Length: 149
Length: 149
DNA sequence: CTGCCACTTCAAGCCAACTTGAGGTCAAGC
DNA sequence: GCTTGACCTCAAGTTGGCTTGAAGTGGCAG
Picture 1 (cartoon, rainbow over the protein chains, first blue to last red):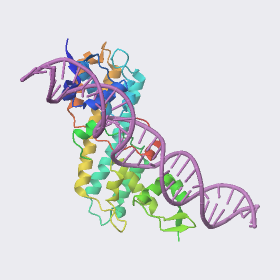
Picture 2 (picture 1 turned 90 degrees about the vertical axis):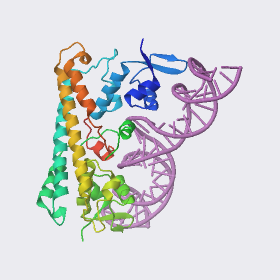
Picture 3 (picture 1 turned 45 degrees about the horizontal axis):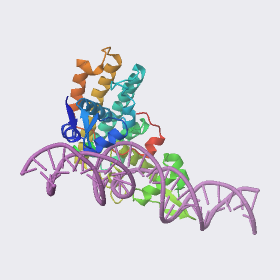
Picture 4 (picture 1 turned 120 degrees about the vertical axis):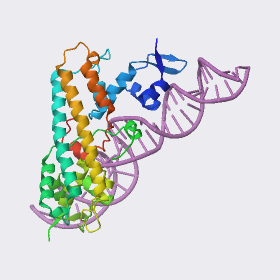
């Protein structure tokens, strides 16, 4: 059988051992055996870690992601809920587009003061009316892979 | 003169007094007087708070935002950084679109297991190749205004 | 003048998602 | 058989952006 020890999983997934232990602690992944003290993971943990990363990219918390896995490791979300999430993402995308355009304008506008630029004020009002963007936590894994703000 | 006390500022801006005090503590805003013990703010603090909110929505930290105000309260925006931020938003938007499509597919796909569905695996690989999304902190103010994932 | 109540300060607490550190274990290679 | 070093556990620390609580203050209505 192909059991991977924590070091191997860490290396292949890019997730540090401490984070893997943490994920196990909160029930997000599980180790299937020990060799001595060392956790052994089944190979499919790598796929699961990809899914977790994907979920975090979407802005889900680890707790929410945990709720998306059914007992047998399958993904399990009711269709309606998935559609609702997709729609929420759609709104978030629209908000971010407004914001991106606002930033681009500000970066390029040569008005003496942005506060006096009518276009800027308009964008600000537009941004001000949007539903607030709800950022998730920044993972240490994300930081490792390169912060850039 | 039109001085607003902290309660009024809080009410009009939606920013709680504790946050306003915190902002003042870190030098992001300043009160111009006291009436008794109470902070009095100049009316333009409301604009400044809007800008702060806008900046946070864009994913800037409070420290970064503080750096964008020049001494006289004008915005002094680093163009390169703004472009970088806009580009980061662009990538985030692309990621979220992939994710949204993945969610929609999952909601509608009738394969026995998503992990076995080729289309899903393809979407996942697409998502996996993305540059990681670098989320800012989630503000309490944002939480107050309503979370929605 | 008295009481109320919105404010004040300061320190401590909270949250997520981890990381770090101290001190311990153990399989494998020499 | 001894060392090595990758792992282990558990508790505490980190970060950012606040909130909360306790104890105090002072302007204003009655």
